[in-house]
Image (cartoon, rainbow, N blue to C red; front, side, top):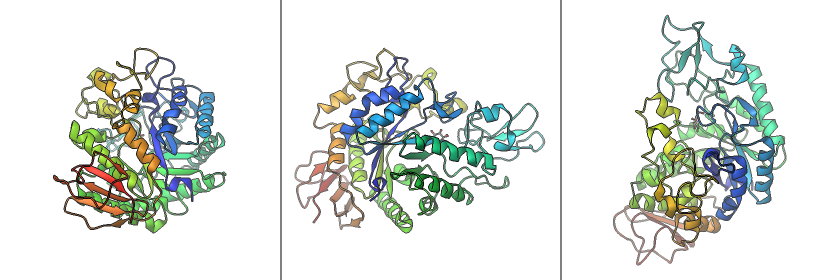
Length: 483
Ligand code: GLC
């Protein structure tokens, strides 16, 4: 079976993973040095958020050179060492590809190659239409000559024109550049955005023309040995529309944002699990599951502040890792890090925060650097006393080193789950009391209690997200041997 059908893939946000040179910003040599953590955790692969040359207006999702490493993160030689070290530890490597837009500092935009971007005439003094940027404000910015260019994100991220064959040829070449360097695949940023509809349309995303692009990319991936794959970021789209991107001749996986967005309630979760399984099965793709990423509020905080949030995040982790298919884990999720809600305004860097003039808190709270060891910030993140976002002093108890020594820690729960996890292909719901979800995958019998009181268990669990006494306590998931 192809490795990605059951893989657990760990997302690294390079800025915040580990800093090797003491500038307070994570980098590629820092990642390489900490790879043993990932091997010990037991994941199958890692996905690196962008590390390319960039003005860093959007944390590197504004790429100025798709074939080079930004000096703040290291060099191409550092990248090659990282891939070699990861492969040596049995870890596959995915890189992030950002095809919807470039940076406004990309040579094409600087050279005024307008036919490679989406330029249009305005309506008098108004922009060409009413499309809004996902970061707030109009999706159009006017050039000194009066024409407008489209940016679904920041004005520093002009959208590319995928009707132009030069754009298509360039990205085929970029894919080959990284495949030749040995990457195992790609995470495709805003995969449903590339083709724009007629300007009279209200809905911008998920245009049919995008599928032809991914059929071409699939042919490139298939022309390389060793099961190279791609996972698509497609948000705000129905599961059956998402499934079209993972048809047999297109991409391999798509993120399951319905699962990430689900409330901590059995009804909606069961419906989302069923819809995800059937949509994936119809096209023969593996279902995928995700609880967090660099854009979303961390689960420990989302599920309820303080102790209840952590307890539910633990239960959610075992529920997710008990499902058939593939799962994504975002750095720090395995440490149960909370969202940092009280970052000082002057430290915040997210364009969402900047462009909304502070009305939106933005995504910096889930991007705070990882605490590795020690008693005080920056907790081993780097060799010097600095980190690009401040780290909460009370993270001493959440460092990797502290959690490794604590058998009841979130880290040891993830380690145990990844060690005990067995691939499963199917899911059968079992009768369960109100407020409990119970399913068998053939690999395990999994039960989660969302209710307020404990329920008797048919047998001793193999793994439990919280201590189990006479029965299955509230906000707890257990794995039991199947019958
Ligand atoms: C994706 C990324 C997000 C970025 C945006 C624009 O949604 O995950 O971080 O801001 O695309 O590239």
